[in-house]
Image 1 (spheres, rainbow, N blue to C red):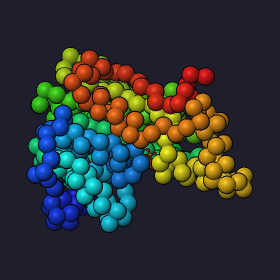
Image 2 (spheres, helix red, strand yellow):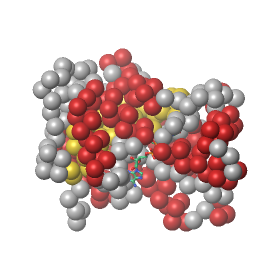
Image 3 (tube, rainbow, N blue to C red):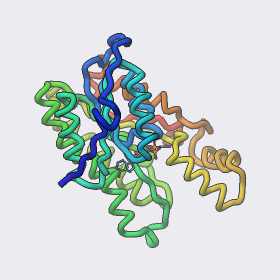
Length: 284
Ligand code: NAD
């Protein structure tokens, strides 16, 4: 049995609704954003909330930090926010995440599959359990959330699925076997999902970011700094100049704006698309 995983009414003093805000373009829509306690997912959640969307947040972190994120999201708009602590490597917990969102907010209209983890190691030293975990969180969870959300979207006659893949859904890098395999899988799954829903008002698209400065990348910068005994600044320059021609991080707000576009009125005919936002990484 799944233990109580929802921080809603009592734990966070309710899914909040602010009466001061005006209607946004996504007013009344309900979005699940996986991995939204941090980094890109948190940015996307805030952006969609500003458009009027009610949000189910998900991801790990300590409860004070998560409560702060729920409060921040609620403060952005007239939307409601709730938090569900599903571990996306557990199918039962994913089922509970989708079910609780639908029972709390009445539907699931937008699904942003964002949660992701990384492990860096050569293939012959890659721990078996870590391979399984990366594939479960980065790829299998996208399948499970999609299979559960699509029937709810069909019931409403509208749905938007946005998968956050990576530039590593298109090209490889050494020592990232599980991540690259999972992200290539997400890119392929996006196309299949788009084809299976093509005749309905449901779209599925994929974003492939290059380097974006988030805790996931900060850890990789720190690893370079430690291994080469250089400063964080020099490690950052090294990371960027190796792969990303702009030598600048892609902004979280730019990715959030792309998600908004994919959910918006002008993107009804956009499905099965793979959008790179990679500072020129794959142009080389
Ligand atoms: P992050 O580490 O800041 O955030 C990851 C989120 O996923 C967190 O909320 C974390 O709690 C959650 N998460 C991790 N394991 C989970 C699990 N088992 N169940 C539920 N939630 C879990 O990372 P980020 O950089 O914001 O990455 C977000 C997405 O963007 C990932 O899919 C990542 O692969 C992708 N991406 C990031 C970059 C980048 O440069 N940051 C580039 C390309 C793609």
